[in-house]
Amino acid sequence: MRYLVAVSGGIDSVVLLDQLVRLGKHELIVAHFDHGIREDSAADGRFVQGLAFKYHLPFVTKREELGAHASEERARSRRYAFLRQAAVQHDGIIATAHHGDDIVETIAINIMRGTGWRGVAVFGNTTIVRPVLHLTKANIRAYALSERLEWVEDSTNTGVQYLRNRVRQTVALRLPRENAPRIRAVRQRQMALRAVLDKEAGAFMQPNGEYDRYLFTQIDAREACELLRAAITARQGMSPTRPQVERALLAIKTARANTRYEVGGGVLLRFTVHTFIVQTP
Image (cartoon, rainbow, N blue to C red; front, side, top):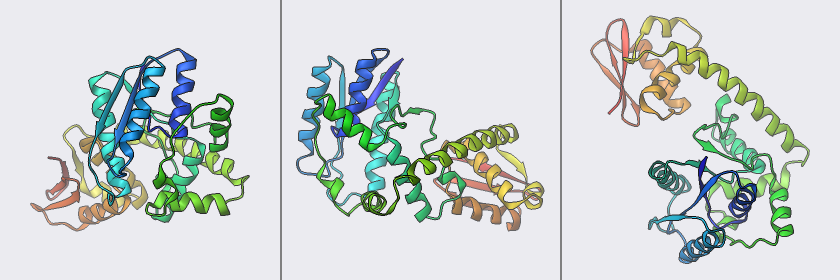
C-alpha cells in the first residue's frame, strides 16, 4: 500500500510519520502544503523536507499565498485539494494525523453550528486513512518525547483567529477528562449507523438522477432529507449541508412544473409535474 502522508511539521504529523516508518509495511510519500498564511511558514516546509530526507522518503510539496487573513475553511480546502491531486498523481491513499482529541473538537464545532446526527459521525471519509485516531494528544506528546522526535510549533495554533483554536481552548478547560472517551464512543455508534443508512440509501439511487416527487412529500421529513442528501451526493460527489437539503425538500413539495431550484454548489433540481431531476454542472 502506498500512503501519501500529510506532514505539517507539527507534533501530530511528525509522530504519525515516525510510526508509519517504524511499522515498515507501506510505501510512504511525505506531502507538505504551505498555506502562505504565516511569514515564516516556508521554514516549516524545509523542516518537513529534512524529515523526508532523514527517512529516505520521496517528498512532494506546494505553496500558495493565501495570506494572513485566509479563513480556516479556505486553508483546509486548499490543503485537501493539493493532497487529493498528489494522491492521484502518485496513486496513493492520503494519511492524516487526526487523533482522538480532534474527534471531540470537531464534534463540538459541529454542534455549535447546529449539526444533525451526521455531525457526530466525523472523520468518516473512507478515501482518507487516519492511523492515530485511537491516540489522544497526551499519547502523541508522550511518544514524541520518548522517541526524542523534533517538531515545529505553528504560532497560529495558540491564537484565537480560528474557531478550532477557540474550541480547543474551551474543551481543554471545561470538558471533564472522563467525558472525552464517551464522546468518542458515541461517534463510533454513529459511524455504524451511518454505514447502515448509506447502504439503504444507495439501493434507492437512480442512475439518471430522477425521482418521484410524491414519495418525498409522503414519507417522514427526516427520511426524505436522508434520501435527498444521498441523491445529491451521488451526482455531485460532495454532501450538501442540512439547511440546503431542508430547503431543497421544501422546493420538491411546492415548486411548479418546468421550474428549477438551485441547491448550491452548482446543483440544480429540475421539476416536472410528477418528478424532480438532480442536475450538476
